[in-house]
Image (cartoon, rainbow, N blue to C red):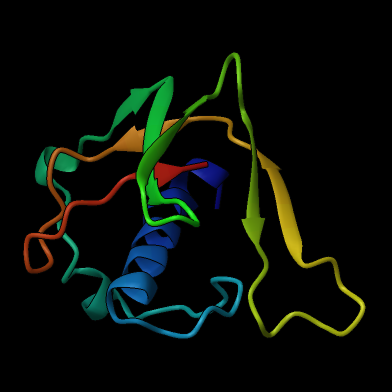
Length: 116
């Protein structure tokens, strides 16, 4: 199977894991085809964007946001899961290669935004 053929099953596995509140395991869980079919992406279309705006609450309870642009400011830092091995770094560092948004993901009508 080519990477593009594996994309949709892996995407649906990832979305199902998040929507069903599965404990993070590196996205190693594979759902059945029947379970994957509960996720429906409208028109099988995903739109790509160069930027994503991430809203958050600051330490002093103020609202703020950061903009990640995959072309000019792609670097992000995330808190590592609590289950990481001892002596592991407490943060993950990444470069965002893109941001995609399906027009609608039909699983209780939950919107989804994808960074890759």
